[in-house]
Length: 384
Image (cartoon, rainbow, N blue to C red):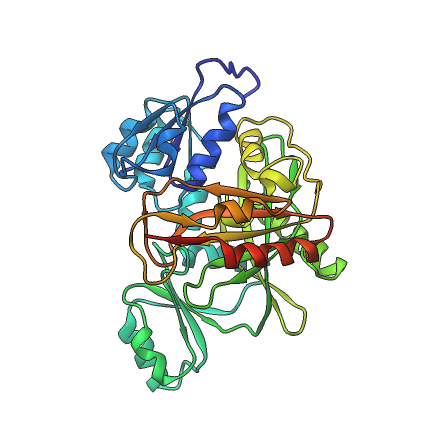
């Protein structure tokens, strides 16, 4: 996109959740007009985008007509009508990342097969058409406990995943096509966000350490930089850069890893878009993941991913037992702590474990940032 004229340029973003909002905010720095497609009239991006078009990202005609209104089309969610994107691309619409890459990532089965074909380490897996097939395989001693079941499509933020440790967990099995993985003995969960432009320039952000909420099975806290051996850091970055290059992808790819108890890295899954594990980059890295995505999809030189300060990010989740119009407690006390940066997404209704915002804490060391983040976690509450 060397001849990009910024003034009046319309970037289409499919879905307007918090990732769409933060991407639109970054685009506004370059005077890019952002059009957002989202069914929710109060989606987070509504108040910051140039134009919000209400409609489903799963409906063929809605996605197709939306794409025709913009100069370049991207997305902040995987679950998009692929056939509409394919038709738009065939008609000459520029879509980044490529819809065919999205088709691979959308289906966790195809994703795992891609890893296997390109020598990307990932947990051994098998495919099953339905829940009954899994139970039959267990009864016939072809499948042993423990294992992890993942729906092939539609899962996110812990949804579409069932951890089956023994027979007592079988009621947790998911219906529909799925894959079953050998359970990895996890010591740490890590993430690398990597960008690639059409020139083939590749840059990775520093590896982050992720801590998951055991009840909601979503990221509760991340630490940048991760406290891991240099060799592990280098391997994670190498694998992320290999994966985005093997995909021949332009854009932003978040790669999640398991680090097992023997120190071996396994790729868990990946997402071709901005990611929850990169929120901290807004303040803690020279180039945020959102600016980097724009640089990548417009084929500009990629920005520096050097750390400005160590950071800890915590997700601001709806408190258990509360559902209704949102009310935040403890903002004043939290903002009085040095280095605390609060991002509220603008979701009007809270419910248990819903992502309502995030807080990034900056400090001279990751340990200091972590202590301050723990303070904030006890002070700042999302209630109704």
